[in-house]
Image (cartoon, rainbow, N blue to C red; front, side):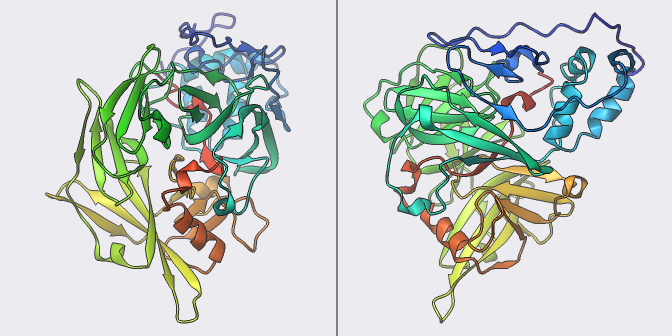
Length: 444
């Protein structure tokens, strides 16, 4: 591949996209926009559902190259690979995609394990509530839900997106993963693409315990054959293999599952008692607790909020410990621990410095977490935790805290406690970090 030159007008053909779910309109490319990055990604790049009249407007253009398109289309693949490695933000990726068809075709030939080292986008609902603990509304009218996407590398522009206007149905928010917001109202389920607004409709969920579903998560990009959607209730885990027409139900047997992540081909979950579990879906579903020795610093504080974060070849636990001083003032500290699988039993080992990494979390732990290597390339800060929720005394969209730094912000400390309460999962969509679904598994 390295020494090959692409011929103009004959780009590599992408594979045919999967058929849409029953009753779901097929999203179509918007007139005048470039072709999507990958057919299997449900055509998220520059798409619009013709029946939904969804609006999604970028405030800046990605086509800013002056030379003739023929010049760019003739570049050797080896040079294009060097350019891809330099992509450090979502805006850079859009610029690459929008250059020409030949460049887009190169992305489909990347190795399956290739991942872009870019910061996630910040999603903030337009009806953002800075005091989510005061809200007890369980369901939202989906047609009224809209949000702003902001690239941390280019905060001067944003993307306005919304759910399709024809979704006149009330649903509760269950989580977000691999570029999709997940909603349900007992039987009906809906996945909404955070970037395009396109929808995926799983089959109806017809089980006795579906009223208590509080969490939903994809375990792989939705365009992959092994992708599954998991729903958790108080006593059951429901599983839908993407593309099938049925759900299966399995006993849960643990406390509330608060987060599910995929790491090195395995699925891990953490429950409300902060126990770690390994989930196996094939050939049959099973869940086994992972024996783990805790670090002494993990017992500090009145309450703690943990997040699992995949960072390169490490599975990390971000631990926010909140304490109260004699004057009843709240303070918190972000510590990071690495799971050492080389010892038996496994052990959480404290990480004093993240090195040239930054981590991204949100206080609703059903939302995805991210890591980014070399954040200073896009104006970020190393060894820091980026929290999707803003602090009390700042007009910024999010908060940035250095690992080990004492946080005196009562709003952040209170929010971390609220998200541990049993009633918290019923709340509405709040600020979070996410990447558009077409970024995941680009080489698959």
